[in-house]
Length: 434
Ligand SMILES: [Zn+2]
Image 1 (cartoon, rainbow, N blue to C red):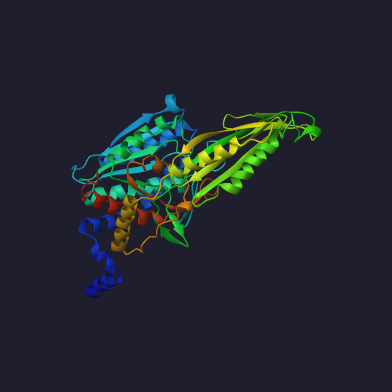
Image 2: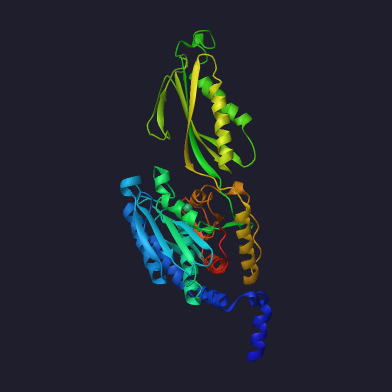
């Protein structure tokens, strides 16, 4: 009887033969800690940590500190309130034997749901949880902790050199951004491989690997013209007015700049005799004008999402050139503000995806294809992308991020934690890549 059972287990999971004893122990630990993972997720989610709720972000940082310190991490809170008007970030370091690859884990503790949002608490229905940040990305923080706990139990954490950087302002980065991300960039220069625990991408229900993120830049075009009676429009001395000039610019953008891996949106337009943006970032304002008066001022604001920083710079130059070809009697200028850099796919990151697929095979999981870069928005890992190869989206599977009703799938936590634990343990035994 006993023998038959063993045979059955061996037949049903032949791929598990590829796991070493410590790896099998990590898998077992992760499977055994599912309830613990859920309890931690509930605790993290029920604590509001909207980016502007600085005390809430600090409370989540304390919870993560309480998870990481017992595993042997040295944890440090970096307060940023005076410098960037954001809470700050949590840095954790685990010193291993110094022989393997340096590993960087990235995440964020804030969510888009501020204290005054009606969406505050976690609700569970079977394996589906709904709550602010379950998907983006408190579920990812739980995956990270589950993987590290399994490594501790199996003895593979002992030799691993790991740094963790959890930002408190990913959803609305503090400025200046250079200062807000300085610690993350420094850790990126130290690391050989990075993983970012935002949600895992899926396509047709299958897990997909991701190694790139498009960057995000916002811009403002301001056009000015000579105001006059409308009867003089197009004519000498009056010209076309600010509204025609702005229309020329945005329509030329539409017709001339389209290319693969690029989008640019127009988010807001204001034009008339008097135009007054009411916020510094030009996301609201007032305009007044009349049918029989040529417009004096027009403003448009929008974004650019590009796959590489080179592509973004080139499109900025093309936009500048279009803006400069003014209609008679008008002037225009464009300004850019970078919110997030891009992370282009690289051979180094593809090699990490290969390592992930080796782990998948050994875990008896299907191979993961590489996600189309167009399908992944901006994120923190792009700040370290110039210095270190990385995997994007090693967190939970979820849906509806950034909207009330955001959900996540609890059954993806152990699957993702196993992948992470195997990767980190294996990378810790590979020689450094820099
Ligand atoms: Zn996020």
